[in-house]
Image (cartoon, rainbow, N blue to C red; front, top):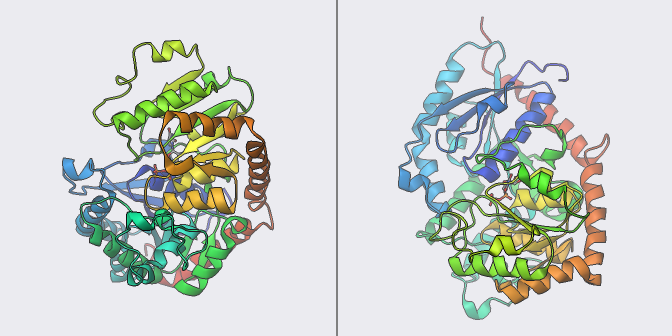
Length: 460
Ligand code: UDP
């Protein structure tokens, strides 16, 4: 650890896998810069404190019912979290800061989607710094939503899907980041509230880097009028950092990859939330089998409707692959993507997956499901050109087979692979001394230290 800063930071992650991972990675980065770390978390999807012996953890009862906690309706879950956590979070924070501490609490770093924390932090006169766990380009699209609403893009009409969104570069109507929810108007409300709470914060930390998202970062700097710190990719600061996985990582993923030829394997994972229908699941299975390419496929338990795990696969499916396919419930993804045998990532383009793939130079087949994933897929395929979208967005075995062959065997795939390896270099050089993320982290540390005057008093 560098010289101690003598300051304690309170971090509050949103309890979803794609948000917990970057928050804990950020905790590690700031700890290595000399800050003491306290993590407040909900009982729901609680991280494992024993993986982080250097941090102090405090949990509180979030009051979510079983139904609320297990819903696939993410906007509704976010609404519940932003309502039910207010009081217990406030009490937890009050208890923490009322106890005299060796190190004064300097600021709260909370997930951008926990918008209620801005008012709570204000009530304690504790500065709040926001962590945005998604990309800057998708955030810039969200900030354009009021304009898009005014221009009648919503609700999205099927007849306009292929139309360009003239207000936003690169996007077609079908790429607009919507989410299926019982409360569509609440989704817009959530975004508006999230953006205004972000604007009221003392700064925004991004898990991205300038070479990747400079135009969006420049735009947001002007729009938000808050200091921005693009210090990503977080997970590349320290290769030995602990896993924040909520599910057990199946290490057989790595021993199986060890038996495969270099750059031959298609790694398939759609993150921690996306689900498939029975028909889609079978098309994926046959597309992978017919591609004749080795594959490592993550199928989360209960992620296929009507099935606990693999029971919908035809009898003998796995045996007939002759060892060419390996299916696990959860993989050590970062390790998988860094493995020499992996040649492509068929992904839903969650921001973490997208960035993790970029950092290993692994080209992508994009199959975004909802929200920012759609924008990320546009940037991967049309802007950075390190992957392509599953043709016509069709989840059909013939299309899948063709797309895999295109990426693994065709000239087009070779060009994509070449661009991906150049982008990988940029993702790593920004962390080196003098690189953009390195400098931005220095600025973030100075910024946090400049908030000192708001610190709570140390014990007398
Ligand atoms: N992940 C993992 N093992 C898996 C699948 C995913 O460790 O089998 C991790 C992945 O490395 C990433 C996170 O889970 O850090 C998923 O976040 P992302 O933003 O990609 O998608 P989300 O789950 O939020 O849709």
